Amino acid sequence: MRKASKQTSYYTVQGIVKRGLPVLSITCVIGIIVGQVLNTRENSLLSMPAILILIPALIKIGGDTGSMLGARLSSAFHMGLGDRIYRNPVVHNSVIAASIVGFVSSISVSVLVFLASHFMGIGMPFLTLLEISLIAVVIELLVVYSATVAIAFASHRFGIDPDDTVIPLIASLGDLVGVMGIFMALHLLEII
Image 1: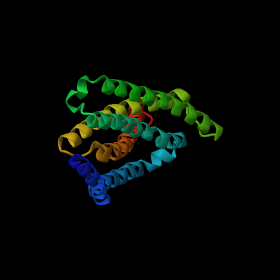
Image 2 (image 1 turned 60 degrees about the vertical axis):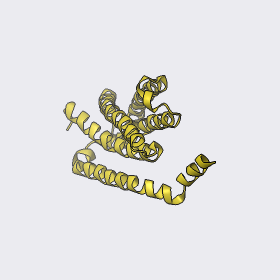
Image 3 (image 1 turned 60 degrees about the horizontal axis):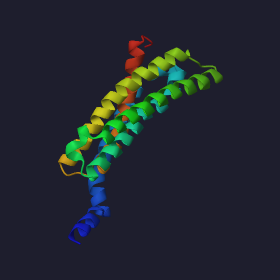
């Protein structure tokens, strides 16, 4: 009975707001930074409309698949697998599955952006879009998945429910790293 009342009191409106507000404040700051990064490259981006179509979809891949991974890690902690998380096949399979989803999504986004941009008469070569997408996604997934594991472990270690931290932080971090990954890909390919 005592355990049930502790869990019930943990999920109060006041408790949820108290734990959620700082995290969401951080995500707002990250969102502003993403906007400012995009703003600094406004002229370059306006000269490449196909990239403008690519950015929103591509930056969501890391955040969304990282959030999927974070939810699985959070579930593993709730099931008591926190000490064995590195050796747990659920975690390994989740990382592999999230990576596959990320790469397939990246290729799909490249195809869709290629078709949409050519339909609108603002196209880029498909291989260029594919290279940009794959480079950006590799960067994004490496950073975001590492951060997902770190945030999940840190949250659990300090007694914070990973459900309250991982998904909002990773979704926002995915946007930031995704934008930076796209710019890095454009730089590596000498497009800007």
